[in-house]
Amino acid sequence: MPKQPLFSIIIPTFNRAHLIGDTLDSIMAQSYQNWECIVVDDGSTDTTDALLTNYCKQDSRIQYHHRPNERPKGGNTCRNYGFELSKGTYINWFDSDDLYLPEALQIISAAFETDTDVVVSPMARFDGITKQYLGQNTIDTTPLIPAYLIGEVAFYTDGPTWKRSFLEQQDVLFDDGLPIIQDWDFNLRMLYQNPNVVFLKEAQIEYRVHNQSLQKELARLNLDMIAADFKTRHQHLELLAIYYPKGVPILKQLILNRSKHFVKLAFTRNDESKFHLVKRLMQYQKTHQDYLGLIKTYLGVWSYKWLGKGYWFFR
Image (cartoon, rainbow, N blue to C red):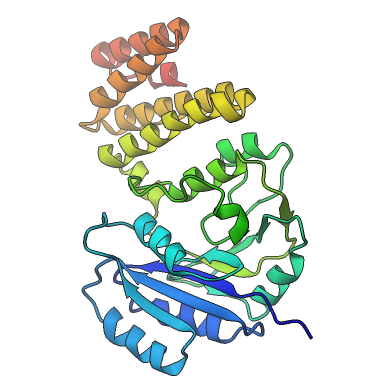
């Protein structure tokens, strides 16, 4: 019987000692035996060291490493470093609070064929506090890239398992400079390279949804987060122009809609960020020659200033 290909599971972690044990238990419970789990610590100050030392003693397939000090802090750095340390034929970047179902690796590995570059599993989303099931993400829509651009499709970080040979052909894997939407950026850049994708029908991974999610930070009008979000999406306008020109107007419209959303939210709440955000919106409209939109934005600001309302202009 041929030996099973090695499966590399790469997990960045930071102060998740209260959660990562469940993740590691789900890996150790796999029916598929030929795996390595590489945990890369991003500078935890909780009991992660002691916990991982114990797990490494329990199972030699688990490795524990620290992000090199000379490298920038962040989950993306840990993911890239973990890949450098890995030896597997199949690569799955996993999060330190999510869980595999017992047959996950077996089912994923069986889905690979000779020309398959990536197998994508849906995620069974559950509330991190109540444990309530929240549904399964959509991963397979045609055409795929436009759907991914606007969020109709989402793989997250855990969903795809990549063939190492495909990843080794890429100039850049995870972008060390991104503080947010790393999975959106990475998965899109890989999709631009036209990988051969196999989509699983049933979720093999359980995805924990937290109260402190990115969307909730954006809803709080965290300007640093909003700026980082838009910076990444603008970078993809340039990439789309090269790899998928039909996606440029789709992403432009998404950026415009998101800009209006944040402006309307800020004015509705009378948040101190409102004029900063409306200035950003107007700059975007001017740059992209959306003069009708620019007039509506002026009218919205004028109406708010003199009448205390006018949010409909930002629709």
